[in-house]
Length: 381
Image (tube, rainbow, N blue to C red; front, side):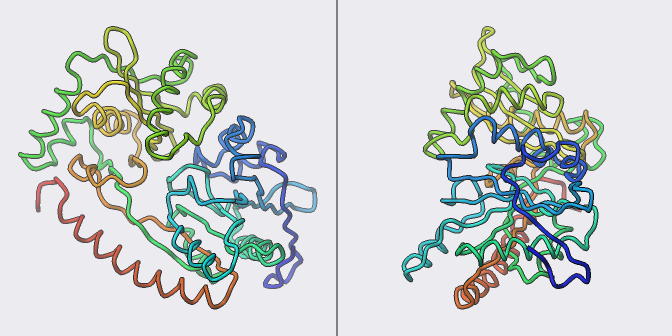
């Protein structure tokens, strides 16, 4: 695929998998985001979490230099459904199919199963962004794909997608921001008196009779993954119908990314009863999965939100991204933040309809963010 917008010929190709590409060359482009590293994406491939039978087929779009070295890439997947994306296009698929079209397969540019912001155009050269996106469009057009979707885009990359004519879409997540806090108590001091008292009560109730262990690196042993797999299966079965990741995925991630993982487990009488899995990035802690075998008040908040704040302060990280949805995070010091995706719709008429829908939706999201921002637990003024 070539891009006529650039005076020199640039050829993009579809690689069979991320695993087929050199790890060092891929990681040189991934900007320290844990979900875009070669280790993370290849662990999904090697464990069967993506691939045959999953509805996710690896199709990274890459550009190489004259010596065959990787200089730009899109982490792309051919999708046969809309599961594991967290940016919902089911209504688009229904409308397309009611009109007699075939919405799937489509092209997804994302870190699979991961509603965390990050770069989606992997390159040190901004001039290669447009050729990559044109290659994605050509892939859709040449193969009858309905659309291409880049989700949870780092805000600074949105102008690159908009310059290519992709449709912007926004939503809201709740992130905790580290304003230079020295401790959890320092953070609490920024809250109103009533909220501060409530959070202290929640932590005390959650920790009563429980031992909490925050594990990282070699401290995470196979028995810890066994326990967490049990929690993950239970939560996944209730939320999604079936868990996205295989058991082997956790083993591989533990082997390949242990220093970038923070596994928080709760024990009662030395038996693990709940856990939360986090990934450590260059400037953020990313909460991903949680589960429990006991129904203990506020344990979810303790493991997923308060322990994450403790860890972010200790590690000097700028923020905690605690995953998709969850208005209950607001009362725990997590603030509304706009997230972004961009969409290429192959059919002109359908594209116009989606563009009108997105314009209305963005206005609503902006109003929601303003309203939510007024309800944070921080002291006013």
